[in-house]
Length: 163
Image (cartoon, rainbow, N blue to C red):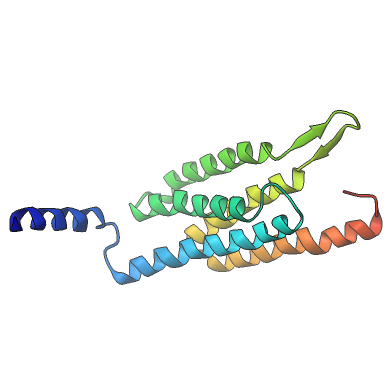
């Protein structure tokens, strides 16, 4: 019985061997948490505006992008090869964002472009967080919120009938 327990324990230890020490575990936790929090900041604004892609969507997109870039970097993938992962993330999120875009046939108006763009940029912020570029991720999030909140108000002042 002790051999079985020992074997199970050794298997568990081996399966979690991708986290060699507390420092690495902390780094992973911080990067993924950063992606979630920054995605939430963008998603919260979208949620307040009543958009379909809101808090959870932006959090998941940002987290997913962080995971997709963090995992290859953890196994030592060269940055040149990781760039192909980035291309896949960017293209894949483009398809997700396309689902947020609706063309209304009556008046030829297109809706959802800003939400699609916010989902796409949330992936970029998740990538930055996943790569450990926290300052880039934070500044980018601030820029996105500036565009979504302040520039929106400026647009409303220019054309009160704008969407």
